[in-house]
Amino acid sequence: MPTEIEKKVITAKNASIELASLGTELKNRALQAMAEALDRQRAEILEANAKDLRAAEELKATGKLSQALIDRLKLNNSKIEGMIAGIKDVINLEDPVGETLSALELDSGLTLFQVRAPIGLIGVIFESRPDVVPQIMSLCLKSGNSTIFKGGSEAKESNRAIFKILTEAIEATEGLPKGAFQLMETREEVRDLLALDAYIDLLIPRGSNEFVKFIQENTKIPVLGHTSGICHIYVDEFAELETAWKVCFDAKVQYPAVCNAIETLLVDRKIAETFLPKMAEMYLKAGVELRCDEASYALLKEKGLSELSKAREEDWELEYNDLILAIKIVDSIKEAIKHINLHGSHHSDGIISKNAERKRSFIGLVDSSSVMVNASTRFADGYRYGKGAEVGISTNKIHSRGPTGMEGLLIYKYILMGKGHIVADYSGKAAKPFTHRKLELKFKDINGKL
View 1 (tube, rainbow, N blue to C red):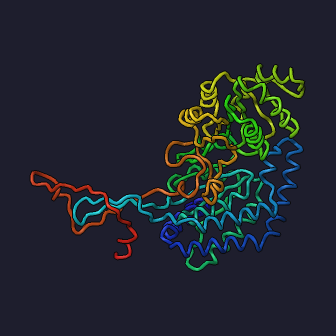
View 2 (cartoon, one colour; view 1 turned 45 degrees about the horizontal axis):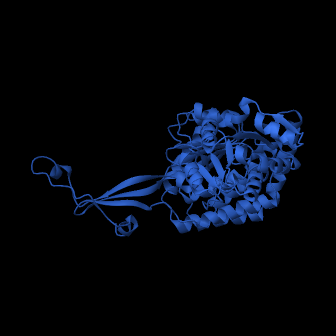
View 3 (tube, rainbow, N blue to C red; view 1 turned 180 degrees about the vertical axis):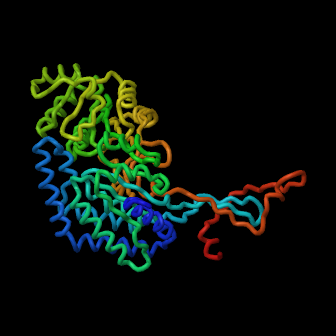
């Protein structure tokens, strides 16, 4: 007999088949109902979140929860507005399901279409951030995928409230299947979930380095995600100073508890003396702890800055998610690129420079999912990239990479339209030749005539 967890998963898997075939207008009606329900039931969400925050503060006092996780957990009216805006952005996105990627004539009357299709059942396992629920649920709904959600226990009340509000809105929309979205709440359910590779098509973990690694190492299900966000900015000798000060400050201080905030600042030796002292003062004034290599430590001490510590070797590969920054002076752009590719996590890395050749070199040689030129790494985000919202940020090199929106929830299928064609006619001595002619044809044009 299937366990309770398996029953939930099987229900969602079955619903995914119906969800995959729904039309755009119906999916958008459900999304609009979700947005309206969040707006209408703000008080319920904030009340649930307040319970989680009280429990989180107690855990923080005993050292069991960090301030960074509490920051991610906290909801307010502004964050709810962001959830609503994210859903409305998804409504405005083109429906990708059924989009023709290619059309190829194999022979007269025999046409092969490559068409976008939903992946099926997505498992989302996340820590702390309850705003993940509407983000991913809206993207999964629009892309025709069912979803299993498993949030961290620290956000249990918030997750439960938001999930209930959203699923009730979806299932009250006539024509939407019931049970397409499921919520799991206990720690024991995670291990059970990881074993259900017969039903779950893709896992998206969102959380700490250790958390994502655990997921990757304990399941046969394909995983989309990144283990850490060790991001860098390199200030080139040809940097415009005002741009460098502004961008580097934003990339660390604007919101340090996220994966696209920089953890290491690399500075070209030729510009260090004019750039670094003011930059360090700006960081220290904002409460940033600076961990400096020998060269930057000596320079800043000479300039009268005292609130510094020396970087250890492990600092080059730490994701702080806090107001802590490692600083290193390098002798060349080549050294900076080598450091980034060696110590970084291939997430988001940037260069500040006015020199076109330096910018081209950095873009071409830095092996990261997002590369910024004279812009903050904090832009590496699905919403800011115009994807409506994001299911996560992937440093993988297959399927999807970087801030991942609906395209990361889609695969494709081949559809062959024929008129009694058989392979025997294309085999043997008298075999007919294939034309293999590319066509400017959309499957939906054919689909309407079926």
